[in-house]
Image (cartoon, rainbow, N blue to C red):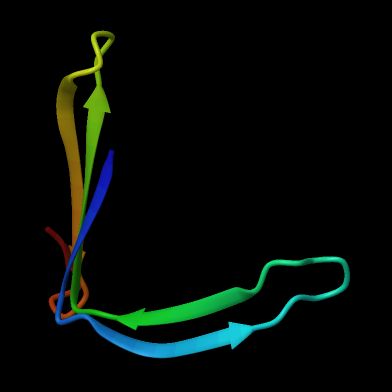
Length: 66
């Protein structure tokens, strides 16, 4: 599975829209503002369990990877 962790998260904008043309479903766009983001990806092994975690992140205030 994939997990994202944010700090100082603010929902900056929500923009709903209706269907277009032959589309039936409505859409919604969301803009987020945050200072850091961390991504954790848990790899699944052949038995269906955890095969380890791959982690990456970025601190936008400090302009560096975390």
